[in-house]
Each structure stands twice: as structure tokens, then as C-alpha cells.
Length: 175
Image (tube, rainbow, N blue to C red; front, side):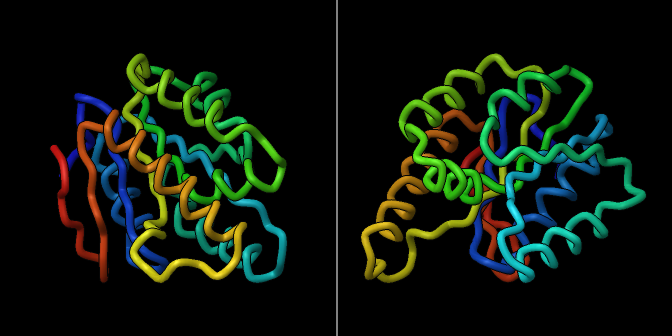
């Protein structure tokens, strides 16, 4: 498995599905300079522990990490170069951050969609597939699920390859 030269890659999966590990392997086998864009924020101890675990797993493997919870397109534009692979983990945390800050979701998604065709780096996006379960009971959770679903459709359309990962096994859906 190698990183596509044709366009972005989207890797979807549920919690603890192996999607990040799969995406990291794609990047690590690319032969390109590896950049990791982390969108997560540590709002509690459990999330702090997850971030520490993710950083430790990448340590010593040649990754340059960029922590950016909101300005995803800005950070991508700053590090975009032909000799690089950029892994973004994850889009659903970015959606959460945008919602918590009251940002214009449609404008943020459109900016990302506009950036993708001209990107020089090989882009790998990781995101949680949240639309396969029951309808959430509260308005905010339903809005989150809907925003994530719309974003996934936008990124999948612009992607050369799309994978769904379950139990550590990737299923190629596009490409």
C-alpha cells in the first residue's frame, strides 16, 4: 500500500478501528517527509492521555507534528510541498472544534474543498465514521453527525482513494 500520487486519501473508521495506524503506515511507506497535523484538543485527562499515546507512537519515526485545532487549511498551506506527505488526524475533531467556536461550517468545508485540488503534498485524512449508529438524542450531537457526514462526502469526492477501516482491516471504497 502506498500513498496515491493522484490526490488525497480519506481513511474512515469507528473508534479504535485501526484507522490512524493504517493511515500512518500509508505515510511511513511513502518515502516522503512526513508531517502530522493533529486537530485534537485536550479538554480532559482522558484526551490528554490519548494525545500522549499518539505522540509516543510516532516518536523516532521521522514525523514533524503540527497542532492546529481550527485553521486546518492555513496549516496545510504553510507546510504544503511536493516532497511531503501530510497526515491530518482527525477531521471529526476539527468539526468539533469548529462547532465549539461557533465557526461557519460551510465556509470552513468549502475552504478545504477549494484547497485540495491544488495541494502539492500527498494528503492523508483520518476521520471517524459517525453516521452508522442510532440517531443521537440531542440537537448538538445530531448537528455534529450531520456536519461530519457532509465533510466526509466533500473530502471523499476530492480524494483519489477512500478506505473504511474496521477491526484493523482496511476496505478500499474508492481508487
